[in-house]
Length: 98
Image (cartoon, rainbow, N blue to C red; front, side, top):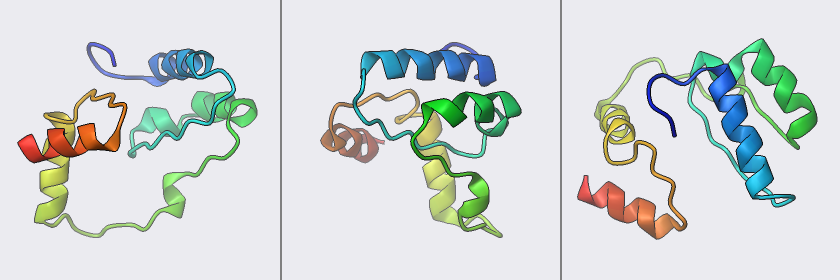
C-alpha cells in the first residue's frame, strides 16, 4: 500500500481512494489491531462513510499465541504483505507458495 509505516492520515487517504474507485459498491475491509485503525480521527471518518464497523473489543481476545498465529503473522508480513488479489484463489496460491 505504501512505503514506511501506515498511520491514520495515510489510511484515511487510502480508504477515500478505495471508496472513489468502487463508487457505490460494497467493500469489506478487515483490519488488525493497529492503533491507526482505532484512532479518534479514523472513528470520526468512518462514522459517515461506513455502513457498519466493529472495534477489536467485539472480537474474542486471545490470551496466548500458538504456532498457527505465528505462521499467520509471518505470512502477513511476507507473501501476503500488500497483496491486493482479485480472487480468493490468488490468496490461496500466495499462501500455499509461502
